[in-house]
Amino acid sequence: MGIFTKFMWTHNLNPILFQLGPLEIRWYGLVYVLGFFLAILWLKHLQKKGMISLSKDEIWDFVFYLMVGVLIGSRLFEVFWEPQIYLSNPLNFFKIWQGGMSFHGGFVGIVTAAYLYCKKKKLPFLKMADVLSVPAIFALALGRIANFVNGELVGRVWDGRWCVVFPDYGQQCRHPNMIYSFFQRMIVFSWLFSLIFWKEFKPGFIFWNFVFWEGLGRIIVDFFREDILYFGFSLGQWFSAVMVVAAAVAFIKYYKEDWKKIFK
Image (cartoon, rainbow, N blue to C red; front, side):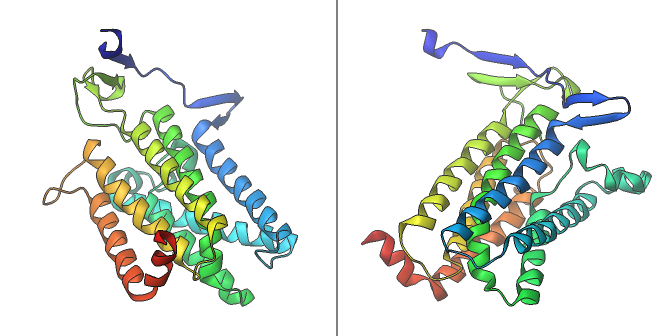
């Protein structure tokens, strides 16, 4: 009977890690800093193994481009999601430490920034997109833990075997969908990490795996998330469906031989 005992927990986590006077250090902001720091370490590791041709200074420059791209893209898309918050006070656009970073906007922003940098430095974009996919999905997984700490992006009301009460959203128990998303992204991370060192694939194959599996995972997990639906799907699910279709087309058109390598 103990295994089937219901687990219900009331969210009471403090999104602020510590405070120095007016300065607040939040878990959400720390996750973003950690994500870019891990990207630097990852790129340096691949540089030492001879897998990428970037100098140490170029790695820092590259990651700076990525930071700017993801911050601008994610916030611009967030304005699209919740315009009332930003139209009522435009300064809210810059308060990234409070949360509110759109995944799809960040994805568009970071891909655009990586493309512009690679074009400027005459680097192979698809190869760089491949190696960046690994730290990107890991950072996104950590981001879902930060969402949980913030008590945002809550799940649908559910009175099942396990659930969480988020007091800011009432006293009803809900799916901890941020935790579901964390595990989904860690599965994708494990897959992408194995591809990097498994076999040699055509440039872009790992990147499109990121796009496909993250898009598909987001569609599934978001069925547990409370959101406004349009023809049965949330906007996030519709955007993710575009990702899945685009990746599927890329696989069929360019990467049939790479899939054959996996199943040999």
